[in-house]
Amino acid sequence: MKSIRWASAFTLAIALAFFGCGEDSSPPPDAAVGPLGTGGSVADSGGAVSDTGGAVSDAGGADSVASSLDSGVGDTVVLEGGIRDGGGEGSIPTGSDGALDLAGSDGGLDARTGLLADGSAGSDGGVVDTAIAEGGVDANVADVAVPTLAEAGADGALAGSDVPATPDSPLDMPAGAGDGGVVAVDSGADRSPPTILASGQSDPQGIAVDSTSVYWTNGGGGTVMKVSAGGGTPTTLASGQAYPQGIAVGPTSVYWTNYSGGAVMKVPLAGGTPTTLAAAQSGPNGIAIDATSAYWTNYSNGTVMKVLFAGGTPTTLAAGQNAPQSVAVDTSSVYWTNWGGGSVMKVPSAGGTPATLASGQSKPQGVAVDAVSVYWTNWEGGTVMKIPSAGGTATTLASDQVYPQGIAVDGTNVYWTNYGDGTVMKVPAGGGTPTILAAGQSGPNSIAVGATSVCWTNYDDGTVARLTPK
Image (cartoon, rainbow, N blue to C red; front, side, top):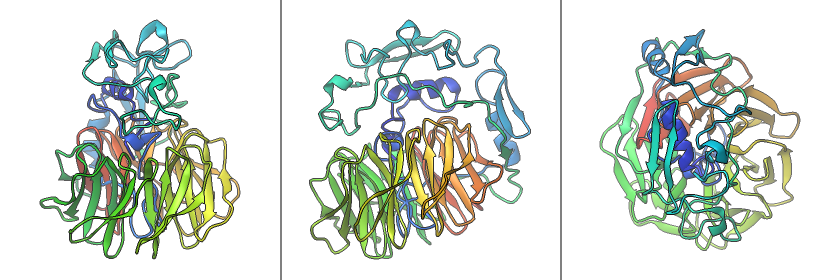
């Protein structure tokens, strides 16, 4: 969101480091199986009034984009705005089936969990001495413990961890990933380079914006942060939180989920004492709000919940879901992605029978909604999708993306982050050619849009960025 639980695989970080797209650190927990906080509300990816997992991004300029793109793995060539790996020394090593081959004959590393293909994690629980001959990468990270699935509880959560367990089969790159497809590179003629609003953050996860400020959660740091949209010194709104994940902002308060602590929280926009809206939740992940209530997904026990801003007993809107991830709301319904079940779901916000909008999706991650459609990213499938909120046929807005993560919409365009190749993208909501707004980002995670800017969190290097205009 967050960690990218699925994506949060420590191993993916190794793969990304090899690609030259990020630091050797694990992806956000919500990135695949866990909180991502990329859900949102009307014209936003995270909350009725804001975004639960947005981020600040920068489009860079024509020169900066080209420069960033041309720093990839081996003989990378930028053609007509598309990115192609020309092979040669340092090109991405693959197995006979085209999947990344990072661990040799044992089948490769699991890009989500950091486990070897046989489900093991090395004698000390870490990924030890994994070398990529072609790239010369020696990922000796024995100091990072990665529990095996055998250590996971019945609900799929790792014992003593804030990151849910994930499948132990190797995660192949999406079909066509690294090939670029048909992509336009934004000229950046009318925009400044991305602005770094905050650095030195610890596992920045969800992001939200309002007319004056940008808000985000630091999963590793246990803090909820705020900074002026124009820049300045970040303010800590809450500390000592238990892996805060998704975030949303309303007229008077900021709302977030504590994934490890099992709580849904709020605090006044100006700061103050945090209030617990709901406790004893099971891996609360994405969050969104409307005019009266907060909605969230419980990743570990498969429920979608609701509670009034004033507090009270939480209401279960849906149960029996398979690893529900991000969430979004409009004036009448709640929408979410089921990471494990490969579905996009909907239920009336007042309660009722859940309905499946789309099935057969490949690890659906972030979700956003506008007045007419629902949008989501397919992490493994490498696609950005759209479907009428009333139901109908799903449309592919973008394919060949590299681990698309957070998503946001402003009524005109759809924006998303590609965690795998460090790009921030947009495409017209009605369809068209995807555009690269910013490249060379370090694990772009959650994303949010405001009136003039797009913002995102960079999980790998601990920064929060803004791009104006969007």
